[in-house]
Structure formats: C-alpha cells, structure tokens
Amino acid sequence: MSRDFDFILIGSGVAATLVCQRLLEANPLASILILEAGERIPSRDRRSWWDLVLARKTPYSATYDDDSTKSPAQESFSTGNVSWGFKESRVRAYGGSTMHWGGWSLRFKEEDFQCRSRTGRGADWPFGYDELEPWYALAEQILAVGGDASDEGPMRSGLYPLPPYPWSAHEAELANGFDTIGLKPGHMPMARFKRCVTTGTCKYCPIGARYSAQDHLDALLFDPAHRNLGLKTSAPVRRILADRNLVHGVEYFDAASSTFATAHARQVIVCAGAYESTKLLLASVSPEWPAGLGNRYDQVGRYIVTHLLFSVEGTRPANPQSLFQEYDFPTLMSRSWDTPQRQAEGKMFVFNNRALPKIEFENLMIQGKTRAQIDQIAGGPSRAGLSAFIEEFGDPQNRLTLAPGTGKFGLPKTRVSFSRRNPERFLAVVSAAQDELFKCLAALGYSRDTQAKADPRGDHASGTCRMGLSPDASVTGANLAVHGLDNLYVCSNAVLPNAAAVNPTLTLAALALRLGAYLSAGASQ
Image (cartoon, rainbow, N blue to C red; front, side, top):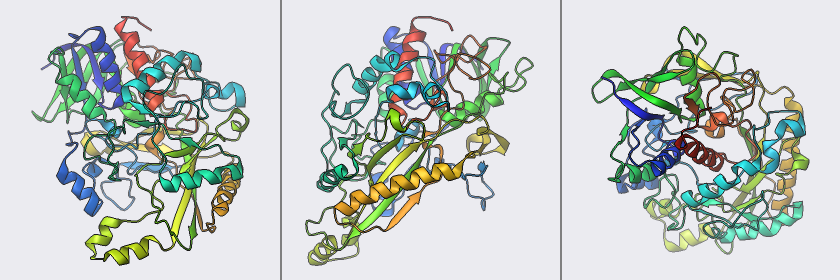
C-alpha cells in the first residue's frame, strides 16, 4: 500500500524536527510523513529514571551499536590504523540522539567555514559564517539556549535567549586556574536547562528540562492544525526509489503490519545521522545509480571525521568544602585555544570533566553509611579533571562503507576505516596540550595523575555526505540537495564539511532551519 506526500522525512532527531517545524509554519496542511527506524522510548518516566539512578541503566541502551568483536551480533566494524568506536555514541529511537545528548550548543567559528583555504587541509563550506548566523540565532531561540554573549566565540547578532548556567562551586574554583595557561573561562552554552532541578542524571532527565526532539515533535504532532503530519516508528527505510535525476519515494519495513511498504513524495529529506544517512544512499542502488544515490564520483562515505577527546586528572589530599560536580554536564569551558592561529595544527575546545569530583551520595546511603561517614568521605581525597576536543581533518582515505549482513532494525551493518597520515605529529600536539592542562590543575593543588586519549567515535562524526560546489568532491550542494538529484536532500551531520573543535548539534539545527525555509519557498536546487 502506498500514499503520496509532499515530504518524507527519514529520521526523527533534531534535524527532522526543525525541518518539519519550518515546513508546517509555511503550510500547516502540508502532508508530511516521518519514518523512524527505532521505537518510541518513554521520556520523563519515573521508573526509567530510578533505573538510571540506582542501576546506571538507561532505557535506550538497547539501541546502541554492538561493536564487540566477541559478539555474534556485531554490527559495526573498525579498520585502519586508529580504532573507531561505536557503542554509546548514538541513540536509534524516536527523538534520535537528543534522547541522551548533553545539551551543549556551540556555534562553529568564522574560520571553520574556510578550513581548506586557511590550512590546506579538510574542506571549505560552500558559504561563509555570515550566511548561517541568523539561523544560529533562531536555533538558539527554539532550543532555548542559555549562554554569555561576552564569552569568546564568533560574531553574534544578539544575546542568548537565556542567561548562562552558573558555574558550580567546583568549576568556579577551576576557572580561577585557567589564567595559569592563558585560558579565558567561559560558560558552556546549554539547551533548555531553565527548569533544571540538578538531579545529576542529565542522560535521562526526569522532568524534561533538557531539549529533546521527541518532546518537540510530539508538540507538532498533537497540534490539531497539523492534520496531515504523520509519524511511523519501527519503520526502517531500506532504500530510496529513484530514476535518473528524481526520487519518487521510499521503501520501508512497517513493523506494525510486518510487511514492506512504499510511500511516495515530491521531496525526500534524509535526516538519519551521519551513519544511516550515508548508508541509505549507498544502499539505494538502481540502474541509473549502480554505486548508490549521489555516488557517481565515489564520494559518498568518504572524509569521515570527528574530533578527538583527550583529558587529564589529578588528586588533592583533602576536600574541606566537600566540593563535587553537581551536574552531569560541564558549565565551565574555554575557546581560547579554538582560534585561527591554532587551526593548522588542530583547534581545541577545553571544558571541565563532567564526572569529577565524584561523590555518589545515593550509593553511599544505599550502602548504609552514616552522615558522619559520608561527611568524612566527601571531605577526603578529591579528584578533578579537564578535557578537550581537538579538531581533525577530513581525508578521502577515511570512509564509511556498508559491511556484509544486517544489524538492528534490519539495516546494513557499518564499517569505518579511519587512519591518520602523521599520527606521531598529531599525538605530540595532544601531549603538549595535556601538559598545559596539568599546569592548570597543579596551580590549584592537584597532583599529576592520569591522562588519556579516547578513540574517535560516532558521537560527532561528519563529512560523509559533505557539502560542496562540485559533485566530484562533495555529495550535497549549498542547499543540501544531493548532486544529480532534483528532490533528494540530506540534513544530518554527514553534510558538515569539517568537524571543527566543538559539538555539531547547534550547527545542524541551524542548517535544518535554513533547509526548511528553502523547501517552504518551493525552490529547487
């Protein structure tokens, strides 16, 4: 059974939600079908929250990628000279990864849009920061971002819609040590924490204080004016139906009827994240597109990139003020190393380790500790840490491809091949930065304990369907239309030409709003 729609949106995360909002603002009666591979996981559910508090069990963990080489159900594979991680990096459910994101909402900076021109590495965007700035401002309004406009960052046309989240007592102390290494402390821009009651369980908020695409999309679905808006969960899209230069619709599995179905539309927008957006294009082969949609020049899946997370930790012998990290997110950050001067070697974004100092009062009480025993533990040795992202650069040798077989939801398995051409030089830059971060901790009386470099993984992956002006070096154009197809668009982190040094969610939100306005105007590529 099939039906015609004005628009089909594949995915239900922040990108699909904001595109949908713009389309409905222009025409409340637009016929829109949203297809989500995962199921609806209840938000603000008290039982789920208690499971997180007491057992550290989240309701969405079953949707995570299985990348264990010892598991017969392994669905994600890493090759190359750098291990690429998958587990816990994305949620595949209604609402997408906003089900577990931290709410960090930072803009890319002006130089991030000119990466190749400035460094000879990575790629330039097909437009500059000024083009996206008004959409950044609108995204901050919709996501209800709180921040301090006087903090270091790109040019802004106005203030944040909400004030910054105050530093915790521990982070305020850390901020005093930033000057030691030339960092200017700032406030982390955060999305919709205005009703936060500091449970410290931000990966599953019991009251919905963090922005969630699920809550936002529910509001659109429940609006009686939107009578032609529909959502299907547990409906993974297997392929996009296309001819030479037009797509006609999609084929998906309808779990409700246990059958395959088709749906047709004038426009199809793929908002399924960096992995699934790319895999769907590759899997959608036809006589006219034997290597997958948009892949005439073998560009789909190439240039996968993220930013590396590294950290340092130290200990003080006593904690007389019983300071601890009150939230499950950092409110202290600095963009002093996120500058044009550092771009060639990799810009860095510094922030407090959200897990330290860690005092699990609830577990101490469950263990039967007395008030005096808890006070003694809280005032004893205390650990602190600083972390940072460092930008890496897109390389054509690094790519995402389809692996044999199918995984969760019956979708193709994932293979990422990621290598660094000069790993020694890159890691030397990271080690030098770690030495500087240790100086900051030392100024506050912390010993030099541990340092770590995490494997790259898919949380902030981008580049696999990157924007560009030429189809032989990119997959999508400036308006996110797939090269060679008049009515197929990709709106996910996959289109970002570079990863910059900060979280991509706000940038994706801005692009989604821009695309929604473009489609609402009835424009073509």
